[in-house]
Length: 131
Image (cartoon, rainbow, N blue to C red; front, side, top):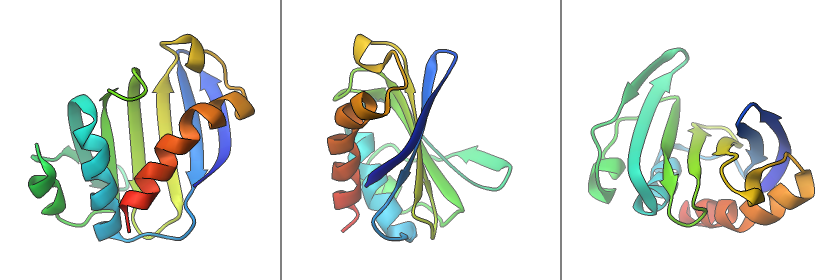
């Protein structure tokens, strides 16, 4: 996965990532299941356009059974990165949006190089889980 952009908005870093290939719903569910496993108090949201709903999925089996939607968001506190995190995957696209709280020194500024070093392995692991 490649970091396309990162910018600071208030107490959050907003970033966009490009997957190697466009992905379908089944691949998104695999990545979401992996990320969900490493979150404290995780939530999953799905939706189309402006309508969003919280998914009733608390484990891998529940996640893998979610009905197809336009996007899927996993949010919670990452046990790996130690910060609040929100990742949104878009169905049939190569776009992933990631929002990270500026809660540690590692994530205080929207420096492209530093942010990429902090997040790249995490994001690559999510992409690899899709296959």
